[in-house]
Image (cartoon, rainbow, N blue to C red; front, side, top):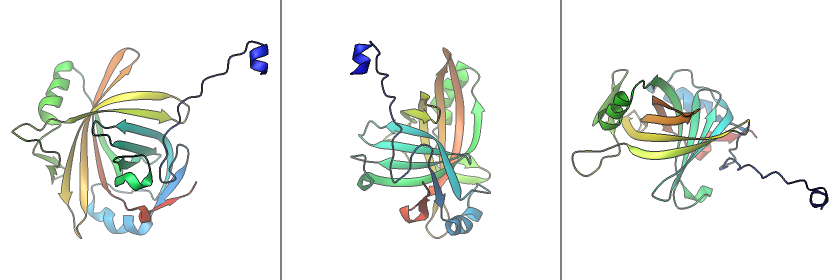
Length: 215
């Protein structure tokens, strides 16, 4: 009422970062320390933290109608939740904890084109002497990386978008566990300039019972 009398316009509300499983921007969670202790010796990562503070949230809407939510933490990690057919916990099909392994700047357009055409998607990908096998295989000789756009919500209110070209790889561990490698070409506009990089991350499966929400 008073805004109408004095001509003050109400400020539009900024979009809110998505939430699921009690995970939200600024919140925190804990991964079962025993699971980490048992699994980590088999993984490429070293020194994984049990406690995580969520500092940013990413959202990817897939062409298939599914969705990927990523909760980026203070330990160079992100908890990824994949949903199919809806936005509730009943629609969750996969949960993984990922750790960033390496980020490399792509300096030229020719390097970027070569990356997209031949480097991101290969039948096998070697990392620290381990052979990972491609997960997403297309019919025919070529299996191009999957294109997606991630919208990222920061704690300070900033919202940005990044185009990504993604391929997944896996290798078997003991006790029917797997380690997953994600190879991503990222492209983002920063001050009217294209910022491009190659990002490698490794991850492993998480069960709901492995996660404790701290608030």
